[in-house]
Image 1 (cartoon, rainbow, N blue to C red):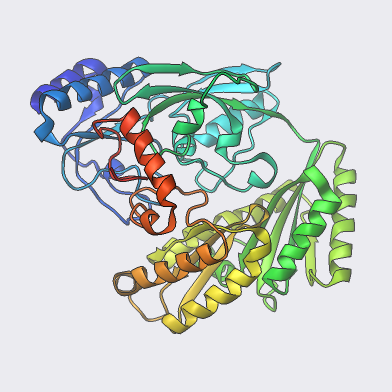
Image 2 (spheres, helix red, strand yellow):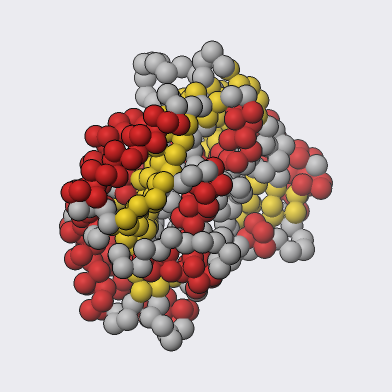
Length: 477
């Protein structure tokens, strides 16, 4: 194995092959649900170096099949399903893309940007903003997550309602295959009907088929105005009714529609006292809306006021405010984005990143809330998410006074079964935007079609026949 380390050091430089010392930053997942042991952390600085590393590992495995060596691609290590950290075998190489952060090109006429996989999302957002454009992917971890990870997990975020997931924002990829070859697919074409869509195979594959090293992504013109409103609603059904009104009043200008349960907001108020949380405490849910207008701020405000007046008249909104400044709007969004951090501060929890038909969400929430209350008396539900595209973060916190670790140990299997069974009963998916990773891979055998699983395994075996890339994640072979 030392020979392999020497080979890798020759490819990326000795300073970028880490096998000693504290490697926690690469071995510990963000939620602290898993802590593995890497054989080494390797940090290439170019696509050619990535290809060299993968080719060397593939050759080593061919010569030493008993080694059990494999590769775990990693971006910002902000994933939520333990999909980008090593297992505890000590036989996995963490391939960190963080040194590959360049914005290669902005093509203004084509409205595209080509960027390396290790570029932090927020860095990309600012780079294109400075050039006068919008890259609309936006999520809570944008200050540390990377483009490769966003694409590998097909990340969603707060503007999927208008712009789609990471998949919809990507036109082309550069990928290092499991054999160490480079697929140069960085097309900026919006129409290319020349066979199978290879790009879509790698997006959402969580590094199990190859390593995304760069991408060509869509850009959009900046809106003339962007306004934010916060509304209190009496029920989840009222939130869905408000969404319908928002579609009719705002059309394509509706770029954000987030629902937040009262308990989720109370956690933010408790753990981030510096934030002013507009609770509207008599109402069980609040909604955060964003209107992006290409005419003017006055036009956007008139649209918002008309929407909220109609919603109050119809009884689906009890009270509402429109942010009067950019600072106020940022504070409202900060409250929403602080919910996962507040929940983490409250203690270990059971996360469910689920999607449902929007029309089914009220009945799902009512039925599943009742199931969990019977199964775990005193359970606390942190329900929030992207209602506009049907994605809820339906998370479960231990009852007060019950140790969080003991709660996970004793109740997580039953809670997952109840929630996932209910999701399927309401025609939903058990993973909306976080991916499968290792936390959900065993659940797929129960909730994914056998035909779909067979096709997935066939693709994995065809592209990665030696199971070198991130084994045990997404699909087991």
